[in-house]
Length: 397
Image 1: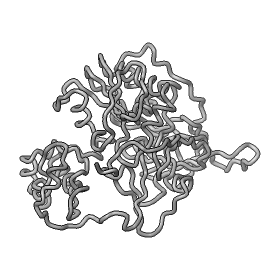
Image 2: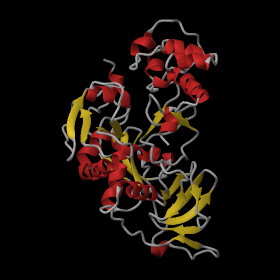
Image 3: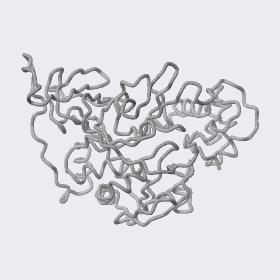
Image 4: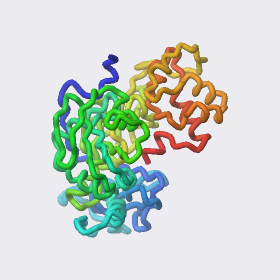
């Protein structure tokens, strides 16, 4: 067994709470900023700052109280308000855009539709929880190697997860719930049966997990929720207030941070240095994506940040396939990545469809074992985009 694919850490890695982040940078994506949110506008923690036009993506709220330092087409930057004895006189034109106190919401009397709508208003994306199902699987494994937060959430935030699970069951209508966790973890959640699996990637991905729990591959009547999403739902379920924090594994440590916390802050807290030629990766080593620099703020879906040192792993190269078959043996979906990559490379996308590219879960195992370092995952994502099929990145929105 390749130890680099083990999903459980050898030692505990407690979650450090960062309450003193001075500046946050909220990524906007498709969110529209409220007209009252302008430079130098004052906001309080939890104040609504941007809404999403779609029904399946949560709105954005200020994660800290402070002043809007900068506002662009891609992000809102908020600087924490100084203590009273350090405040300077307000500059002319300062505005209080979100100064109303945030009142907690009760979810008790809401039906599933109203509950989903209220959660969207509070920053939760309802889509993962509103799929009707008979069996609700809680994915309690770390999604990828190098992520460390799953066991710690179960150890440290069990009541939060249970509060989230209660709402998730109401939203999905599931008659049964199962918590899947590592064989090294023995934590139960009220309202869920327990199932242990060997923590070896790609067991943490949706299709292999459904297969492990049900013995089937069609997934009919089954929905899978990541522990990361359940934790966020639980935070809102417990408090009745908007989502303003998230948990992430950054550079080998776990943190509970305000949304929008710059990656540079996590670099500093974990005592890592970014040097020329290094790469920052949002997500895991197998499916993560590189970002331009450490100024990027942590989004709701960013459950990990990795530092890939220059020459830390073989670089991808546009080499021809040597037909060794290693990728075929490694594929958990029993596809032929060698043929898929050839078709994609030469833009023969309909041939990719014939090779069942829609079944590909983009786990990255084919590229991991490829001796010629072909950019397999990148080719598959390019082909899927050309065919109008969902890719891993789009499924995270």
